[in-house]
Image (tube, one colour):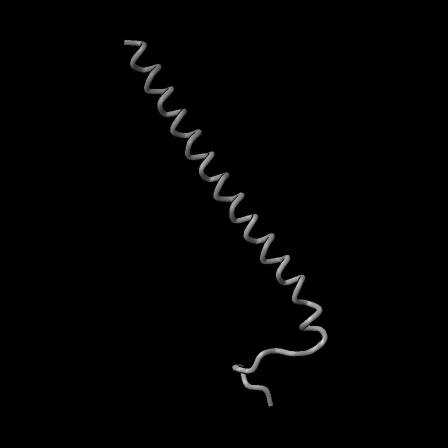
Length: 60
């Protein structure tokens, strides 16, 4: 019987380690890209807001 505290061993576990690491790396890259996309959308919204306020002020 295997306890949950013992480290996992075996051929397929060892073979799968690089693929799990690659998957985690890709996951981190996608998280960073999502964060960059969110920041870009926020900045674009702020620029749009400043331009709209500028148009309103210039129309007075």
